[in-house]
Image (cartoon, rainbow over all chains, first blue to last red; front, side):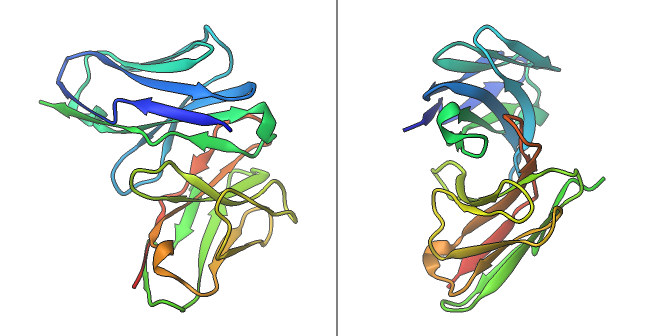
Amino acid sequence: EDQVTQSPEALRLQEGESSSLNCSYTVSGLRGLFWYRQDPGKGPEFLFTLYSAGEEKEKERLKATLTKKESFLHITAPKPEDSATYLCAVQAQSGGYQKVTFGTGTKLQVIP
Amino acid sequence: NAGVTQTPKFQVLKTGQSMTLQCAQDMNHNSMYWYRQDPGMGLRLIYYSASEGTTDKGEVPNGYNVSRLNKREFSLRLESAAPSQTSVYFCASRSTGPYEQYFGPGTRLTVT
């Protein structure tokens, strides 16, 4: 069974204090790993897709990396507007193109 | 380009009542999905439609039915609502393949 575990569950940072969020996964053949941002009361907003180990993608203060067992979302010099819940999801070969397994998210709070 | 839209935004039902959640996308995506999101749990797939005219069960389909009305629209029906169906419901769509999903704003449903 495909599994996605995100840690920590919650993270509180001072503005400017860099950190990383972790997403570890167990799947039978990875087709893609996705990162989303979710603000309170809203739907998840797509951030990145990673397809193979060693791949990296960046967007503003965020950088996502992928290994064979986990992915990291690095946040450099975060600002209060980066406060949100960050979701990780994986698509495995076993599920065809339709089954995506989501983690429970890391709730990030950035304090001014 | 509105992306994925959902109606209603909020709904309160009494046990045993029925209702239909509406979803539409304007991105010409083939695949559409219905998820529910509950505290402490990841997004769970209720039903999906890989293409117009097809629907399949996801992880938690009991108590729900769906209709893929055309390529744009995918509705979710609760025939006899139960308190266990209190949740936030998200519709999503994406192109065929291991690509990212795009989510709607959600419907917050309370069943009393």
